[in-house]
Image (cartoon, rainbow, N blue to C red):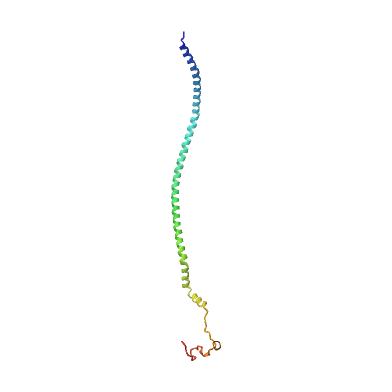
Length: 161
């Protein structure tokens, strides 16, 4: 006859097989699904990796082009900065020349006017002061005799110098 421990072992084995067999079947289905997923995803992944490689190559070539362009721009910006400094110096020089011109301009103009127009200044000086003629005062106005008036030279009068 069969011993009890053998019956217990057969029951336990049956329960174990009953639980393990469906789990193994599910595991097999899952593995098939994963395998089919890898079979369809593999080529897509391979294509994607190739495109990523191409994009990386384009980015690298674009980066190299940008580096060359930046070097060219650096030369341009250095030239522009030099031009700006030159313009600032020219502006400062122009300010100084303007100040000097404003200070010396009227003096130079007056000097040139005096050099080229001396007759006008003499005329202007003589016309600004009216010419005075000696006034003859009659005897009636001063109460003196007419003899006190100066007489022209050659008229025989005395000279009061």
